[in-house]
Amino acid sequence: MEKMKRMVAVVISAIFVLLCFAGCSSSGPAEEITDETLLVAYTEENKPFIYTDEKGQLTGFDVKIIEKIFDDVKNDYKNYKFVQVDKDYRIGEDTAYTDGDGNAYIAYVMVGGISKNAGSFNKDHTFTKDIIDNRIITVTAKGSSIGTYADLNGVNAGVVSDTAKAALDKNSAIKDGMKKVTEYPDTASALADLKAGKIDALVIDEFHFNVAEGKDDFKVLDSELDTISYVYAFKKWDWYDEAFNEAIYELKSPEYNDADEFTPIVEEFFGYNASNFDYQPPETK
Image (cartoon, rainbow, N blue to C red; front, top):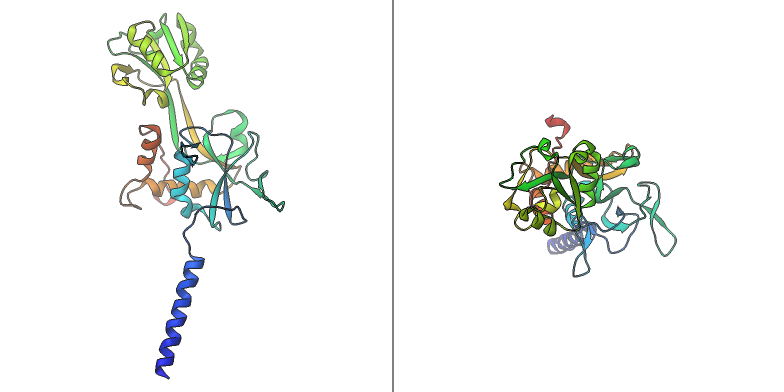
């Protein structure tokens, strides 16, 4: 009888182990979208936030961050899936995916290099704290006599990228005081002309400048023309932003990990620390 009891106990223990493996599997990217799948929307590939690599796999800063924090934000979801949606997609309302049986699924978070200070998008959405910042800066040759923005009056300047051009256009007093503004298609040619003295100053965003070859040959003026802040977006008044804020905070804080796991991911995809994420949980404020 005692032997039989031990055998029954072993069988029951084995069943519990099997059930645990069946029900407690690690969460991650979904192979098939179901009601238990968190859909993460993006409108277009936007390197280094989200893009397809040379192996045909979706990767990028946002992909890596979602992978790291999913267990902390998943709520009742078991897995997640990135889905591409139209530019006018309404988070938490519109269908983001329809399966073969006609079942419709909605995305409740949007990523992919979303700028919170972009037109009417602000009033319709709730955002995380600023996750990535892209400052619009002005650089000159190291030996230049230009030391402040006031010194840009009457100079020949260059500008690289639509982001930098928009910031310069917004600062019309500075732009109107310049003798000439030349638009450049790429960073390398602009910095080459700056070094050669063909232009006196260059308006550029940090995303491009900080990964440029030879950037140490130039100096950056104090302050910036603008700062573009990138965030994750949710439906207006959605509570989910706080869950993401806290998850990123914990990823960054050595109090929750052996080390800061957030900053190395930023540097991996942006080439420098492009983040000033400063969220503080309510209990620490």
